[in-house]
Length: 253
Image (cartoon, rainbow, N blue to C red; front, side, top):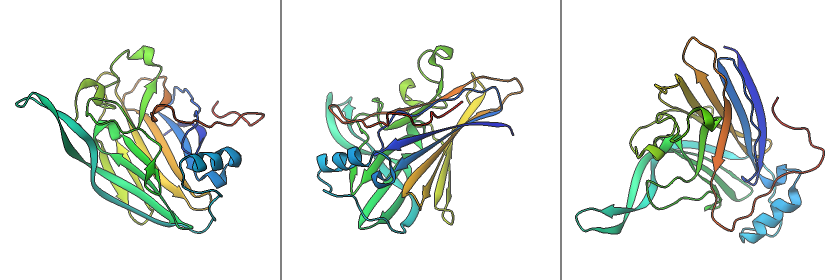
């Protein structure tokens, strides 16, 4: 199967990533969510950690202990009770998966839901997540992945790829967990309108102390299509975003 690829690096899980378009069967997007000590922007990454009060110096680098496992995750915390006619606090659990590694006394976790479009719900350092998790199920949060450009599909996104904007909170991605390879992969249903599906694979780069995310857009039909990857990461208001500047080689083609 022919593939086109693009690479982007996320510094402290907050950076603008690159996009690529192709007419081949599969579009792939490769991204690293990197331990700040592995980045060129070490000074700003350290400042980020200081803001969140986790440390005043960079962590030591060592071989991480990696685990991957399934569990129910708290997807949302509030709902409207039709009978009582008021908003109530209620932990809504949905099936999910956790990829975790521990190094130098620090714990890094990547949590994903099978619902809400295979949502990457949190990226945590010692229990603190940089991603925004809104309380209601009809609110978009975490990190989503859509095909681009939006002008092709308008609004909402293809329901099979991200059902949340269509008020569908039960459609699930298929999930496969590789305990030996310390990774997981989620695959969407096929979009009936566009005849495509997406998949998200998460692994750990032990040398860089990084989560590696591989996205695919797969053409399930017989006719060529042209798409680009589009990742949308939502963070809390008044947050900080870091990105590289200067003469670095651009990603994509």
